[in-house]
Length: 162
Image (cartoon, rainbow, N blue to C red; front, side, top):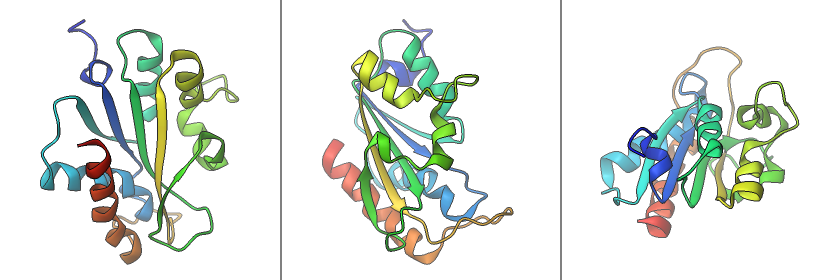
């Protein structure tokens, strides 16, 4: 059991997804960094900045036991809302450009988050922030409205899980 990664052995995995080198896409990792600096993380929670590597982590969780009871994904999306707005989306609402982040290679229609929830009885929650813009070339740093949403999302997570 000690060979399993820590995220498999904790009750809750909170994963900040996104690429800090592409503007607002770095929202998830920024929230994880903020939580780490400003909150005491409970023992039953694994808080990870997963960058763009969530697929490997979800795949590892799906392969065996133990596994977390809850996986919380923190990400940035464009759903046409006000930039900086934070909200939850269902697994069916994950934008198509993000779906590949969660799918098993060579099985593009398979969604690991859905599989974890439906086949492995892991609860999955996706908490997101509306982007202002995601640049087409490398450009680090969040837009002002998304930057302001970081402490708000951190507070929401802390109130619900800490």
